[in-house]
Amino acid sequence: MPVASLAPGASALLVAASYLVGTFPTALLVAGRRGVDPTRAGSGNPGATNVARTAGRRAGALVLAGDVAKGALPAAAGWALGGHGVGVACGVAAVVGHVLPVTRRFRGGKGVATGAGMAAVLHPLAALVAAAAFGLVVATTRYVSAGSITAAATLPVATAALGAPGREVAALALCAALVVGRHAGNVRRLREGREPRLGAPGRPPGGGAATGRAPQAPG
Image (cartoon, rainbow, N blue to C red):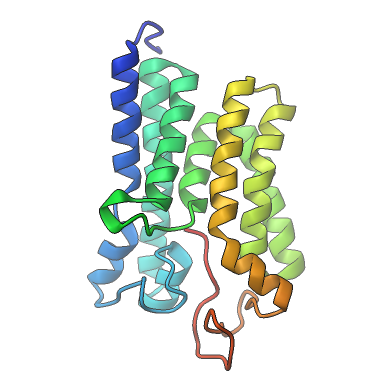
């Protein structure tokens, strides 16, 4: 049962702790055990798909599970201890920690999996809508990045449509803006027709011949 009277200082500590949880280097640790640095191999993104391409599917699955948990666990803890609003704050903080980790000079992943974990706990129906949007776009275009951007943008809209409080919608909108902004390179390549499709060999960020790089993946 949520502790409605949780002190502001305690809430702030929960949010700070959630940010630190988000900085946990799941991809670096999992891929590193297999001799791979995901920030230098493949797409250079420390996310599940890039790890799967460069270190194996099992490693990719472990990274995906870890990154989802980085969003889900802080959100659940915040909700249980301070109420739903604190849960949202903790979940968003975890996403920020994943995308902008102070421990790695603010060079993190793209926040899609961590955001999905947060959303699944706090707004499961909206998360299903966002997941459906992701699947539809990827199935239609075969661009994972386009699906990720669509899902991120859909989440706050869906939560608003389902009656979530304005503060929570605003927090999720800011989180979505961060995730979309992290895909700026993908957007540029989509406009230029250089973004690799799902299942096709990727290209270096600067263009040129295919090198076997993975597409820029959700992180």
